[in-house]
Length: 120
Image: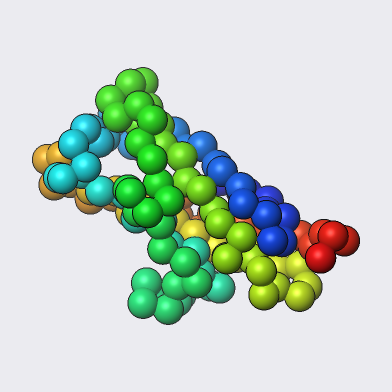
């Protein structure tokens, strides 16, 4: 997964998650299921050093919890890119815990390219 964001813009991305074995994680009931998306400078950074963390209720909204793929959106706010002064590529991945407690990582090593805009 690769996303392009424009500096100082709010952007929404839609994700569809299907496990490698073809099954769909059950994301019904946010009290037991969770989605955590961490944006980092490098894949080696710890979650504590993330530039941004999005979760259900704080930027992530589950659209379809059990369809042919679990579908959710993530709203990347302008706060993530406001202080960027030159084009940069960031990395992210998504940690999903389904209702049965199974954890897995989706999109490991995915990128966010931040491009500059003239209107600033």
